[in-house]
Length: 340
Image (cartoon, rainbow, N blue to C red; front, side):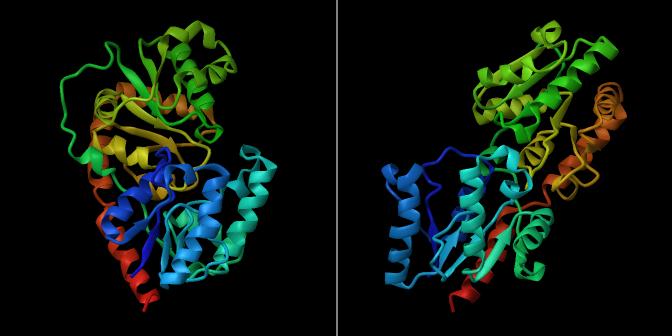
C-alpha cells in the first residue's frame, strides 16, 4: 500500500502545502510524518533523506511525494514537481538553494516511477529543463480549498469605499510592486475614490514595495495592508471587491484565481505562465510589463457593469471545472499501477 511523505504537515500553508493537504485527504493513504522537531530546516532534510527512505525500504512501500522534494536515492516513489522557478528565475533564490534544488531534482526525476505536475505550463518547462519526455509527466491541477466550500456569503462590510484586491505573501514573484504602481497610475489618471487592499503575509513587509513606487506617498492612505486574515474574512474581501488583481511574474497554477471566481470577483490576471490555462476566457488577461494595459483593464472593469457580470458568470463556471476528487482519482490509478 502506498504511503505519503508527510513532511508538509507542520509547515506554513502555501499553494504547494495546500495541494498536499487536499490530495492526501482524498488519496486515503497513510501519511508518514515527522515530529515537529524534524519538520523544518536541516533536521527536516535529514528526516526526508535518511529516516523516510529507510522506513519505506524496510516495509517495501511506494512513497508519494506531493511537495517538490523527495528522498533522492529512494527509487520506489512518485513525485509532484509544481514548477521549476529556481531555474527560470534564479534572481529570486540564493545560489546555494538553486544549486541544491537543481541537482536534487535532476537526481530525483531519474529515480522515480512517475512524475506529476499541476499545469501544462509546468509540464513543458520540466520537460525542457530536465530533458524528460513530456508524455512521461502527468498533469493534475489545483481546485478551490475545501475550507472555502462551506463558507456562506454574509453581510460583513470590509471596506466603506470600493476597492481592488490583491492576495498573497510578499515575494518578488507576486509582483506587488507592479500592482501598487498600476493602482497609483489608475488613481492619477481617473481621480477615483477606489482603494487597493492587499491581503496576506505580514502587512509591514509591503512597505518596501511602497517606498519603491513613484508618488506612492501621495496615495498611501488609499493602499491598505491587512496582513493575514482568516478564510471567512478573505472570502468577504473576494465578494466585495470591484476586481481581483493577480499579476505575478510567474505561477505554476494560481489557486487565488479560482478562489476569487468562486466568490464572485471579476479577475484581472497576467497572461503568462499557467494563467491562461487556469483562467481561460473567464478573466481579463494583461501583459504585466505594459502598465497602461493594466490601468485600462482596471478602468474598464470599474465602469462597465456588463463586463463585470460577464466575468463573474464565466468565473463561476470556470472554477467548478477543477475538482480535487478528479485529480486524486487520476493520481491514485497511476500509483496503484506503480505499486503492483
